[in-house]
Image (cartoon, rainbow, N blue to C red):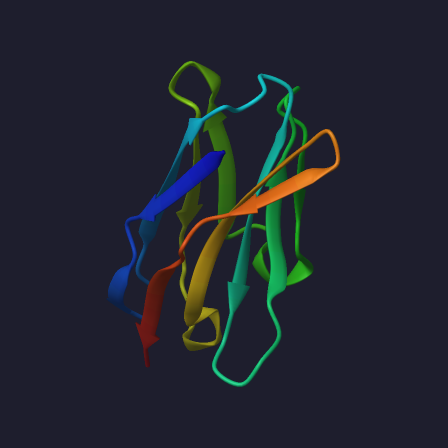
Length: 115
């Protein structure tokens, strides 16, 4: 009932920047938390950043000071600005929406950082 579509991934050199977007559609609630997770090859899916309805944020220690999460509630869209990218940031980035005990995932977008 809820669809999430990520975009903005790609190949970038170490030290570069990318901006990811995730647009939500369908029968979404106006009260929700949205976040980003990533999965490197051979690894589990890990938390990256979260932004709540009141715009409060949380970040994984590995991305603090480099990544910024934001949201535009009028557009039902969440963003992830990624600066000073490192090769260890490489992976598939997934958008997540959580509302009233239900969770939804996007299809993922590939981010590759070359050394």
